Length: 78
Image (cartoon, rainbow, N blue to C red; front, side):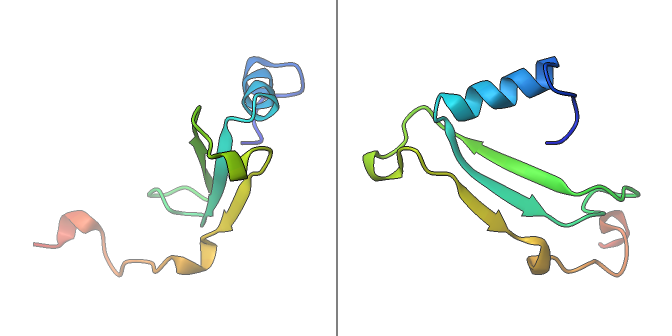
């Protein structure tokens, strides 16, 4: 979400999505969601069929507190 400086390809794509009202929501996920990483993850919900009452709006969802760390790797279950 934050990579790519202003004017870079990634930045231009994000800007275009928002300016064209295609971003429905952003879900903020906790860090370490992916094995051995300390970065936070953001899921962008994009649509070209926004409901009339949602035009011009973006929903922000903080799902960080809904995360429970597993006691062992998923591969170890079974």
